[in-house]
Length: 467
Image (cartoon, rainbow, N blue to C red):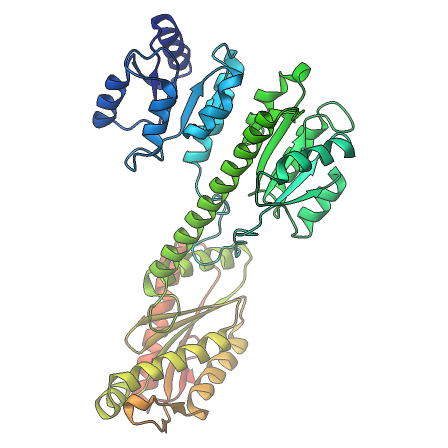
């Protein structure tokens, strides 16, 4: 979907020119000339980005930026301000997401816009290429919440020392001077920085951009923030750096207190953005966890288990391997609830779920399908191994009593389980979803046979006999 950009500039030629440039690359653009028009338009539509120019008839761009940043309803809309370099610090202090010179060339303008929109459009880091729900790799939290780590990779140790001297009094961060090899080595070993400040030219022309690309592909550092420091004569690298994934660019030399303060604010904004993204990721992971797990036992629920079984069936077929499906039901569970109360029943379900998960192991799938019914799936599991696993599960339920909570009067009880076993046979005659469902149906029929035969036993559908 095309991004919507709102442009506010009091100079007609500047406003029209900017509108034409943006529409030429297929952005949806709304242009206004005054503060009042912008505020009125915000009540009608919500843009993805606001670009503030100058010469607004009824107020200054700085005041408007400050007003928007303090308005909860629109404060999260990024603002790109077109200001002279000597106004950059004031613009950042007013709440601008980024600044550009009013005479910026087309390449740099579009690169900066793409960078800002990329930050708001992208899913939380680590979620783009995640495995199916619940199978994703655990993500690292926000590394140093109190004192984040900023890695300084300069073209000369003296430059890095100067950066640290100018920034350390303006930010509550730890600063670590690193060579490119040290930065890559630390990222590979899981000791990445929260932010990297990298010179565009370190040992050779443009090698800082190569380092940026490398760090963005490493597992340990791909979610960090990046700022590229560029010499005045190498200004053409700014747009390239942004398109390679840098969050911002800054001057190579921090010669004045104003320049150092602007750099510190840039780094701090990247740290804040990183923290927000980490929180988004945690929220998404938590919501996914709630959606796919049974709240009582912590096992996967039916909503997750059935699609996952389909996927495991597909994987088994691709590798010509067998898949074992176990239908497990606790015997006489209603009597536990009727005799000891529902808190005792819950305690039994939680304990049996724990035993099931430990018996199935990390490579398999354990799920609560509802009530006292459970599902177990084991990949790459021949029939004989599946029968031994099912019998082990039956015994681990039977042999160890379950401790009851004090609310139920304490003590302990013994419970048993009946187990039905079926195999998914590698075959291309039916689809993976249908094959998985057929295996569950066969396992359920085997479970009913186990119940009819006296309970507390395993019946294998494929062998048609009790184990």
